[in-house]
Length: 447
Ligand code: SF4
Ligand code: SF4
Image 1 (spheres, rainbow, N blue to C red):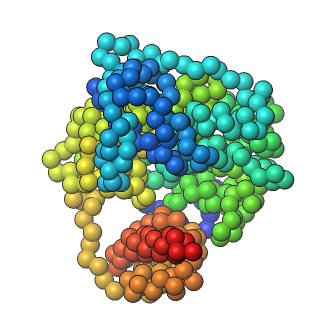
Image 2 (cartoon, helix red, strand yellow):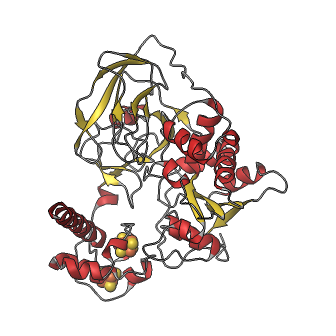
């Protein structure tokens, strides 16, 4: 196949195999209801505060925890059932965190107890932001940042372009792809709602060109004369990062330390638009999401619409379980996701994928010295010097690391992917950044 190199993209980046063939054509299926659900109170921002009591009956869609402050969102029950408690449970990160534990009602039909629908055109800016927060809606691309925070634009700031990320540049993941194909009308409905509220003059949706059916489905739902442009982009990682997507679409660089809004853009994921359409038009808050279950270790790869709080163990069982040779489970994509220490952890609002890998994919070759080949520099879309950062991180040179803009690293892993010496560059950077953040917290505590 002749690759359309004339398509737009950003500078630098890498081209890992996309491994999407196993699930990209599979229609989204529904996860059957299970008996127990565990929902961490923190799912994007500050933990929410429970508003139901132990032993209380709850309805599917009912609010069970309220946002605590602005950078926090409400949490809703994914099932009709009963509150078992508020103990600490294992989070995918490995930490024990406060959760709401629910027992599903085995006799319920599990119909959603919908909230009142709301016409977004009848809301002013603050009422709109508050309503999105009440829907529990966070960015569904993986970061799970509360969606409403991006819609509260500072006075005097102009949003020119509302940008949707339909790149899904992480290998294996196809949940956004299926969402664009199957729910294109709702993606565009969500886009119209947000663009209208923000006063954006147009909407741009970037979709990597390995999803031609998604491009076609979205274009088929654009109304004549509407200022909505669907742009096929090169397949390149990490194009789904906000700044890279803006560069790919408009040729404009978002400077280090600045936000998309500084160049007149607000960026959301396509899945987030469907969640908004469900909330405003159908009164259904964020209680489930599409998860790609894939990787060579999974018996029956699938795209599954999963009630939040379902355990990864039950999700994998729904997909036929894993092969005995599976040696690593990852939540999210293989580039930016995290390895799971246990599969007894819940699906979260930010869970885009659950991947099972065997030794063939996870074996790391021996590490060699730096060849000074520069491939990591060519890979880094943030124009950092990953080789230098890795060396400084190993030496514990924290001040010099900061002077070399280590905190601008988005931990995309493109440098590690490109390195022929198998130097764990991003892991070294991640540990160093965490140490710097700890140090900053300590210093702030002293003053
Ligand atoms: S992980 Fe950081 S240093 Fe490495 S390529 Fe990505 S942004 Fe650059
Ligand atoms: S890619 Fe690896 S070997 Fe090459 S310069 Fe970077 S750190 Fe060194």
